[in-house]
Length: 615
Image (cartoon, rainbow, N blue to C red):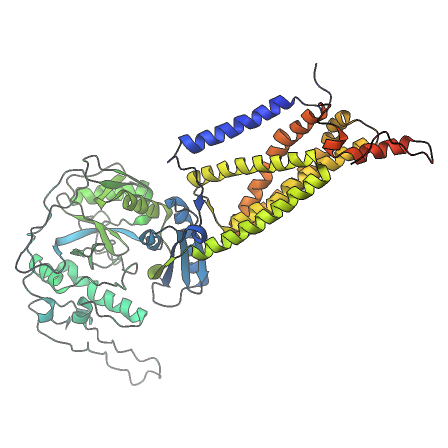
């Protein structure tokens, strides 16, 4: 026979709660790394704050749209890379990334522009600043098919230094790179004659002189726009594709990898490129990505131009090298991109192709055979974290701006811990006052309130630990504030139930019969109140930024768990008490006043009942 409306089987509900707690703590202790502690935010455990300075491709001030788009993409990368508890905010034309922990290099890499191109290697790469007394042999580069093959060219190192060469002027009216064997000259390119009949302001501008010898030694103008133009003029000269192997080697010998490269993320894919790898250990001369638009190169000619960029990538996944040489990144091209890659590799068997990320060479494998099917692999000396980072950056797309990490600082947790201590003291005092009030006003029911709050804390703690593992949620001061506020929401649910119980007893019902009726009437109010709190937290989470999101998240989560505790713990325990003659004694339950009021209402006018005495 089913129980009447409002009556329940307390053991079934309490058993369900016990199973939930056992399941949660089984996941806490027997999955993951086994650490039963939640992840802490930067204000509680310290961390790294990196300021990224934005640079537009033309060196001008970045637009609002570009900055907002870059911030959104970096936030997406943060989530994809699994960085816990990050914060990405705009500060003028800068982006400030705050990441808990000490991985400052990982935070810096979040601002990588990720403009990917595939360029054919012209000649052989040479080491950067080699030891003249101890020439080293170039090791075989990684390959695209898993087996090593010798790189193209003779692999000889240059014998001359950059100090013995100077720039000259090309036929196109621009300074040529400082190659060995050319006469020293710093003559400014000839200026076209002025038209005496042209109005003022329409005379052809005179080209400014660019000292490629200084550029090759890493000396650029302080003006970012000029520095980018100088780099393009000297390091992307069109004649680099027409040089013989000896002159290419001399060009590489004259060039020194700059410590700070203004060309990063700003190279022109339609021009050849003189650049270095990411570690600045080797230097390369690379072919253009796209052919000229004048029709001089046939559409099916892939002997020099790959025509491939990061936009042709469909997916990127990191994994282990099948040959056990570290980690690799597997790329899957889109339909047209796969066709381009197949034609390019077919036309350049036994040649090197450089995978160029933000102007720097990530890997330069040999092409051992045509690669068809729309997929390939970036191999190199990657660690697991580096391969994962590169795959995620390529998968999430390139930024509209290039960034450089202008500042990185370590944030101490001392101030946050002091604030945490103050917050916990304040929360403890508030919780104590709630306990005292409940004990004074509700007595035994007040003890149930304290027990329910304690059990709510038990389940909240386990959920925090698991969310930290599964979605990288971190607990910060704002989140703790959300939990403290939720104490009032949880206690309010108990108050609604208990006050409705008193109302039923004032109408003359016994404690046992009043419980199911009070629960039916109060649970709708509890659900409505918690729904309003949850919606407010959800809206705040969607609209807020930074730590306010943490406050909203913990407030909403506590509201949901409040319902679990009220339905599975508080109501069943009250039902158990109501069925016990000893525990339902008005002196213990705190309901004597309600019972006395019911007796007084039934007594004749002027009479005073002493059937129930409240103490």
